Length: 184
Image 1 (cartoon, rainbow, N blue to C red):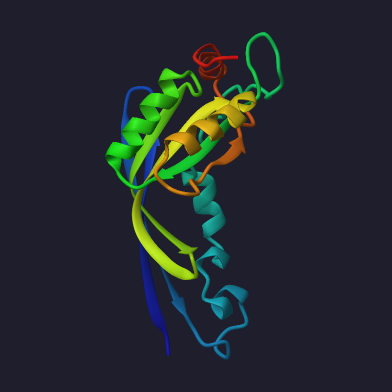
Image 2: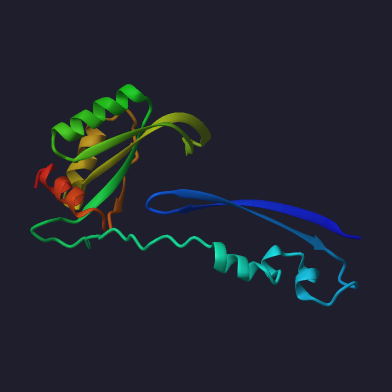
């Protein structure tokens, strides 16, 4: 008994002047292994069909290599070791107040406020689920101790989240701006 699976894939091919849309319609039948010894019929996998290789060679889209030059995070005249710090806050007002004070004190170059975070955590022996906002703070690695103290002093939680992750590289211009927008 055969079953048929039909697939329709759209491929967009870009050129400088025009975009063309090709439709590739493929179907294959999965037959029982007793009716044929071919491996593609046994597996029922469209990837193993003999014409797939031909279609890939004719219709595959290969994106040009557009790698973004990155800077390795070593201290130099152009950049400094930098980090991203996560801090959660209970609401938008608390987040704005804390973000403003962090940037004003030049403890960070930028703070993103991400709404709609739901945190699940254990506190005092009970599992809690609370809506929160997430602050994503970009700063120098050397400012982490001062930033942590600032968060503790200005946060309403007894134990605020302060988690730092290293920035391994990125836009040279952004990292230079980060350096120039923070205190030493």
